[in-house]
Length: 359
Ligand SMILES: NC(=O)c1ccc[n+]([C@@H]2O[C@H](COP(=O)([O-])OP(=O)(O)OC[C@H]3O[C@@H](n4cnc5c(N)ncnc54)[C@H](O)[C@@H]3O)[C@@H](O)[C@H]2O)c1
Ligand SMILES: [Zn+2]
Image (cartoon, rainbow, N blue to C red; front, side, top):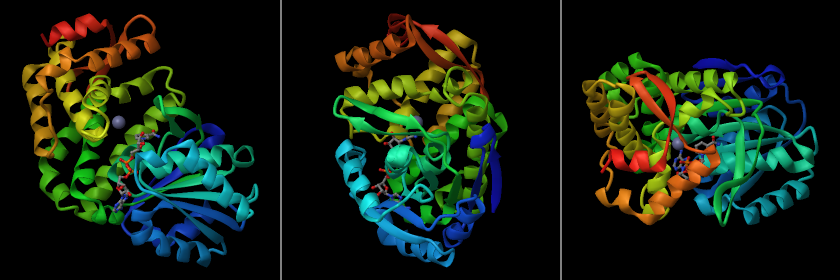
């Protein structure tokens, strides 16, 4: 097992990564300083089937009285309607201020349960127990929680840091192949923006990763979280350096919006976005062409797409998604580029500058 600390002043907390940690969940929650009895274990039906019983047993051994709250799997559950049913269940279970929410699942469960914890009784503790690669290397850490609005993703939310994160890499064994692979887009991202040696290690270890080897997963997840922890500690509210985590995301989000949500998984769109951002980095930030090619090759070897559909840059929805991004950033898109593999910078670029680079 590896443990690391996220330094956030009073909101500092530990992160534990390893195989089999689910069976020690209750003891870990106690060690994080939670002394109550009530525990709302929020999960989705897919995850519950595999892991709810073990989590419940472990919580009981640590003298919690857990209530399991199951939601339907999928992005549609990240809604105000589902949130309302979660509040109902928490109230019925008489979860009080000393109680804790345990978010057992992927990013959907983590974001929804984290927001329920942020708002119930004006905020109670949450422990994140991520079970997808996306959630383990990205969404569980950083305190962003929330639900979607019919008009925009993640429109309603709050920053609410977890009291602990328990990433049991053995749970990744049951993840469907496509969802498993998807998560490695974010892993490769950390290497691309801040750790050149990680790129070499991923090149070396990709076969073991594909085989879901627990030891290699522990190393990869812990290293990813170490990088995210460093960035979040430096810029919790994303006013500066945290923006580099958006590498591959500007064009990735535009592609998700134009292709219709559901055609690409988020990680697949980000993979394509990173390949395009690498090309733009050659033009605009002096990235060596061989380093750009190396990044693209790694993404491909990880089983992820890299080719932007050529019609995307002419697609009205794609362009309007970019314009929306520009509006938010006030005057230009803060585009994340690489000057070297392993080092990122941001540049303000206009929408037409971006589009003409790919013409
Ligand atoms: N808060 C953040 O900083 C942040 C960052 C990135 C993504 N997100 C959010 O995360 C969400 C996506 O998360 P996700 O990719 O984990 O998707 P997800 O939570 O929908 O999980 C993907 C699928 O895998 C299933 N599943 C989860 N764990 C499993 C396991 N161990 N075995 C078998 N099946 C399992 C789920 O039931 C679901 O069907 C999006 O809503 C996104 O906005 C948030
Ligand atoms: Zn992402």
